[in-house]
Image (cartoon, rainbow, N blue to C red; front, top):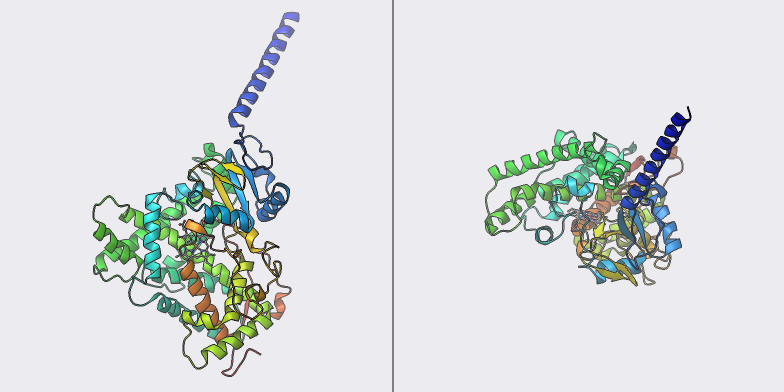
Length: 503
Ligand code: HEM
């Protein structure tokens, strides 16, 4: 009996020692090591880093609290990967503008990279990114797509929004579907030279897949994918994002095939035709332009250009309905400036300081992309006294600059005066960075600004928007995500009379 007891004791002791050795080895293996003179931050735990300490639903609030404790530049760990969070104008300007090149990379090995297979323009860097970025900027800015112009394409879609609202005048309507489909169609007219009926399968399916993927990438499953690589091949909900992506890519590849059949070289109708022309011009000179790359390129523009503008518009109408004084002042200015003119043009913005201020203030409170897609450092560098090694993930907290107390007259209220000087002229404070800044600044900024101005002015000129009585107290808190979206609401629509100044 005694021998048996000793044997059991030895086995138990052996198991315990083995357990602790494995535990210590695992701990050492997954331990995160902070680089020398790296920005301070909360202590990470092995494997998970700081993820379990952050509230993913109220992440911005947690990031703000960390900034109060550790300063404007601090670090957190995403699993074992160190990331530096930039808060406020000074830190973001020093990194994104002053050291544009050093901070213009993109991280590797995350879900978003795997979804885009290292192609496209949004999540790549290096020569391919540069070539494609330059091409998109010149094509979108110089209207190389010929007729109709960018402005005419947007006005064409506005015609359909107006028709829908006219049908609903005197009632309340659902603005969510209306503006998501409008934003989608504007991008489609630029990329494919065509718009889709609201009930079209192409439009419905792609909007659904884009929205689903934004939620997965930025939600819990996206975080799990990025943090725990061992789980990536398991049949977990993040596989849906890859499935959706294959479907979107297929529909975009079909568009490219149709264009190849119907195009006339040298007479581009849209961005796909321009790209195919460019491919022919470059030939096999080793450039990164290819048909496969084109599909991912379209995908990026599609993703980046639909929900961003539609959610900004949704925020605009939420605030305009609940701030009738601002709405009426804009309508008065629009009436005075446009007079009998049939259609507004983008040029008219220079004569509408108050309306311009209103649109910028909407973008400030909408805070549409609160955390810019993560950047990465392209070489070892320094920021505000700290060492940041090459390849570190950088998280520009754009949201922090848009409400930084030292930068705004009214940081925590909706007030177009944030963009007006004492003479009532339109001014743009430096902390206004909803499109980010530097080399990575949004490449659809020009298009987005044109869309917002033309849509808002046309609709304010024709309609009065009223917060429906039965809707109760408005809730301005947005739903957090890669793209902020306001909570669903109803839009009360009334037709304005010809001499109506908004009253
Ligand atoms: C990138 C904001 C509309 C295309 C970005 C970034 C932000 C942003 C914050 C990240 C920049 C960075 O990484 O630092 C917005 C907002 C929009 C809008 C607030 C509307 C109100 C559009 C539109 C397009 C577009 C309409 C399509 C033409 C892109 C692309 C990138 C980008 C392709 C990636 C650029 C790169 O990595 O080089 N946008 N965007 N965006 N945006 Fe937009």
